[in-house]
Length: 166
Ligand code: RP5
Image 1 (cartoon, helix red, strand yellow):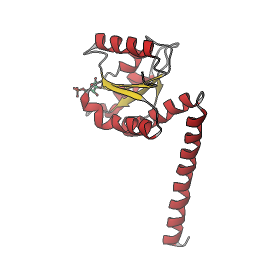
Image 2 (cartoon, rainbow, N blue to C red):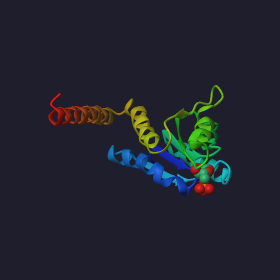
Image 3 (cartoon, rainbow, N blue to C red):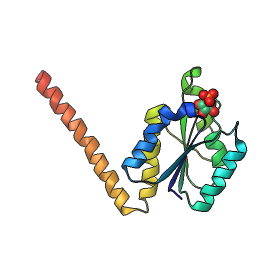
Image 4 (cartoon, rainbow, N blue to C red):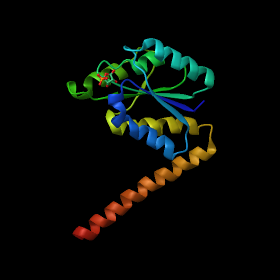
């Protein structure tokens, strides 16, 4: 059983959630990636979770739009960390999904990241940081990634300096 389970509410979410899978893949973290809906397939959500709980999945990542209850429904059934990615639909620009995901009652947290692709990437980074607490090799990869982000900024600043001489 993989370390991370990514659930998304609809195939229509795939383009926005795919960067999450890519970051996990790049970091060498095993994951399962499937579709289930808190509303359309509540029984499937429960069954998938039972398999994940029995198999030792360590972190859940749930992406959904509109009245986004998938992450909350998962959080209701586990004490493992749940990260929620609000997906922006055509109406309300994602505020609906953001509020539905983030406003959990005390005791049932969903660690909510930004909407859409940026959030999808950070959901993976957050999951990696959680896993790295007990994985020294992964922690080293995260340090290296941070160094690469810094190097990118240094390089961009240098190119701007070259261009404007200021
Ligand atoms: C949510 O409803 C899904 O996560 C998706 O963001 C939204 C619309 O789903 P579709 O009608 O495109 O399948 O449950």
